[in-house]
Image 1: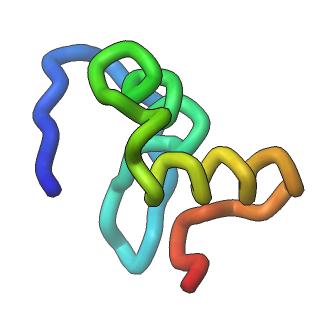
Image 2: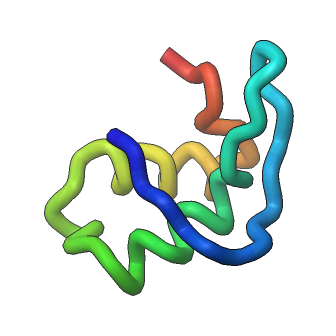
Length: 58
């Protein structure tokens, strides 16, 4: 999936790529996306609540 945002967003480096900080991205999905129906968003929220970074988590 590719979403484009025209604003400054917090990023992290993953394998030499800049990706949006997971907590910030999930915040946006709470506003713009039916996140209560999206399995990936639900799992990412659960991982963050457990202190686990969802980036690269398989």
